Figure (cartoon, one colour):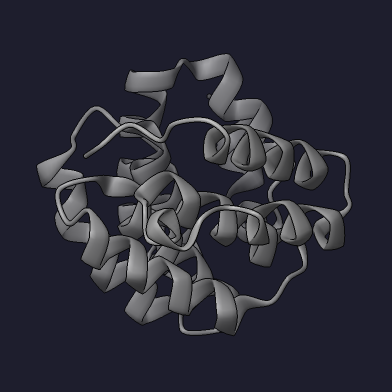
Length: 165
């Protein structure tokens, strides 16, 4: 993957800043200033995905995630983003099925295991959710994952279990 150079990297950083400030319209404006040659760069696509996610435009986010996968198949972020968008579009089974192979390919990436726990829990597969949550804890730390999980409505059916961890 080639490194994104100025001024495009500056536009991308500004876009991310606007997303974090809760202004997806300004973020989109900054992203549109990136040269056409770099619009398919994985980092730019990640920024675009974040803008759509912040706006809860899940269909658009899903389309961008699929472009991320095409641009960088060996990088997990496109796959993670695709599954997240699918889940938000109420396609949780597909989200789970698409993300599961990544747990084996990228066993140390805690967000994969955490998201699998969320999806499994929503699918009523509590044993699988507990195993995935344990893997997330192994790679991220119990306190951090526990705090995230107790604030995550997707894991609400497991909150009693999580409090006892």
